[in-house]
Image (cartoon, rainbow, N blue to C red; front, side):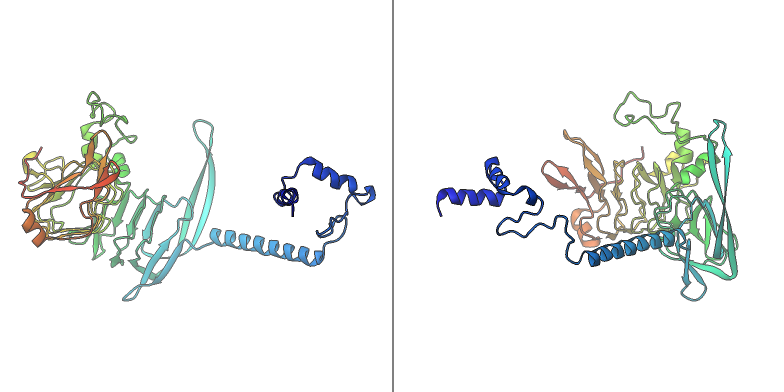
Length: 427
């Protein structure tokens, strides 16, 4: 094959031949064969002719479309009519709530008996601006022969509507993950006759108040209403970086922070349960001397929390510990710090690990330090331990990457631990 023929073949293969090549073919095609002319070596065009098995292919396409549309309609109908309540048999007898799927805007729910039917009624009103507002009310039918005795893990997982939950007197078991990521949950109330659980102003505890089980994520909304604040008070975006900005200005007062964004754990508490403070909007948390365990993810992703300190004496009339009764950081009585316990506590600037700690779970302080560039480190980029290094490593069972890390140029840098430290004075 000559170089010219080889080039023409290559051009034909790549569909890059020049116009004269096509013109040669075009001029050679008889006018009456322009639509069905067969080029040598290629299949004859099917212009104006039925395709082979065309009828069967059309039927197959229509059949596939009908099946696809039917499946789509089925699942749409199934989703709209899925029972909001899924129950099962609880261990030891009784009924366990396994999953709750909010039917829309259900804001309150009493967990006493199994719900068998949900009726909704929508009304439309006009507000002061002349705008239409739709409101939905719910009527629940319950079976009093099926008392609820248990709440399954993730029973209310990621619900963004429910605001108030009342735990009935028959509930004997609540999984610590039952209310995980309930972003609108403001308060959990417990029937006074319940022998296993109680609440303190909307925060869930076991009956003798030795374990804090759940601090509702949106509890600050409940507290704003309780103390008469009309809206959420936040400082300006740059208040942390601008010393000239008064943190406690007319829009953001110390009183507001004390009443809404501060929580004092009762002195009876020995255990902060798993996920007890998940995603809360707390700025300050006071732990009692006598606390022994911070379970897995106990203070999980509290993005704004600045201080976790210990109190040792009676509370004042305002419900807060007096300055002389405050110790910086964790209680001396603490022995256990669970995995991911202080995950993402990026606003904290100090952490002291007392001498009685014997266990620190993996990633306990993960995501709690960050390099903002130009040598500026924020968060828990340094940890302080009461024991010297040899004693610490001999006594403490520490999980993988418990100290966390932060970006340091091209490579991450492990958070440093300063051993043999004395607890600093309160500030």
